[in-house]
Length: 320
Image (cartoon, rainbow, N blue to C red; front, side):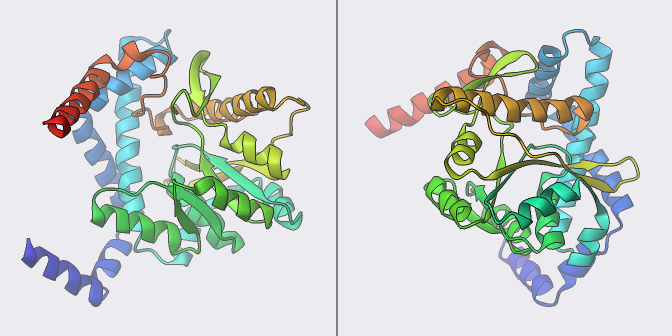
């Protein structure tokens, strides 16, 4: 273990790791990523089960064969994304910018010229890490990112490097609302992911694929409080291996006077936009997440039961 750390340190010191990984062709990254994803599909029964159930739930008219083929593509796409994200830590600005073309640039330019706060919201689709890094490099914009610390130090440091080397600022999820509010009040930009389930006490109910799910109301709260511009952005993989950063039109504020009604309508609208892009590129979305667990726990009963057992064991250890 100590020898591995020395080799790693030597490679970092002399730039060998950066040159080796950064110079691998994207074609090879795609090939290796698809192979990695296929291997995970074959051997990772738990996540394969979650993806299968999510797809059958979202697309009840799909045949078993169609679900299986789509699931394989989802795993392969995630494998590619994983290796791309790793490579991003060792790419320079010029190389990263070459990967991406932008559509809807005018919406972001207009927002920047308005001097108002900007909320960029997205989903775990395509290469989401690339999207926010591209925005920072391309527009010279420092974006506030909210993230949880990853337990593995190596992985945590890697993700931190990817997210901050373009000028973005990472903050911990705890106490993030106050920091986001300060940034938006001063005309800054904040990026949020809105496609995952939340605790019932922290979320609002929305329809996703015509099924009830929970969604974060943070975008709604901040947009209402600071009258900021809310832009959906998605970094979608193209068939030639490149990417398109899609900047969608800004979301209009609702006319609802009551805060609760506003939160629900706005959360539903952000979810509707996310669903639209997921339906267009289903193979690129993160179907590994237990999106409907709050209202349809039977979809993930094995995982929920295991989690309960782990919690009970922890309680017993503490009490013992």
